[in-house]
Length: 302
Image (cartoon, rainbow, N blue to C red):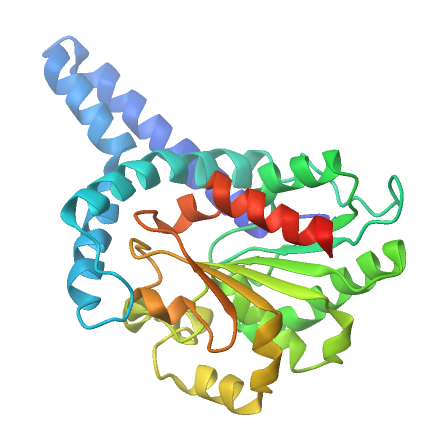
């Protein structure tokens, strides 16, 4: 397991700062007006929900003409509510404070089981995968979960990190692992595949990965953010160096209500097992029961 996480420290500061600001507002205005005090506290703590709403409106219009089913306003509203409740559990609890909860499991378990490597996405760390690691441990599989750092560096810098994790799980099980990737993690996995023998991985599961870029990346000025731009140079170079036959080893989960990776079909690959889940947002998608259950079945049957 990685010894440290720069992202965890950053998200600890952000989470605690928001909490302190909310409590300070509540205390300052409580004697003057309970309503103003509570409203201000809620606005500070839930300010992220406004930005999520803007993303959902953007995907509704940016996705016009996309082959994936266009979301209804009802689906978008439900996805917004789901993401509003899912995001704090990830960004304010698991990643900043619980990312060490499930150390890499590299001792052979009951019987002979294939292992997995978990690769998180943009502005995430291994704590993202805590529910997955808990379940995989119960099922008796070895696994390793990476921290992709530098947090805002080039995706190419993550190749050695993935290489080390794949090597550790392969040694522990004697078999090529399954890669389970969320968002940008799927692009990092594809970049790693171009640097090695493809036989070293059994299957790649991607969840909300911008395989063909995302509309939102046009606003990024960060290295890895800009690399996810649609029709960007980094993605064109990656696609040009790939053997399209490798896509048959991919299972790509995507949603018509993904508020980060849109238009929706950008999260699919030609020749892959592309699986649509309607009405589910970006973070929420990784923890949908049908996504987790089917993905665990793929690992179990490998």
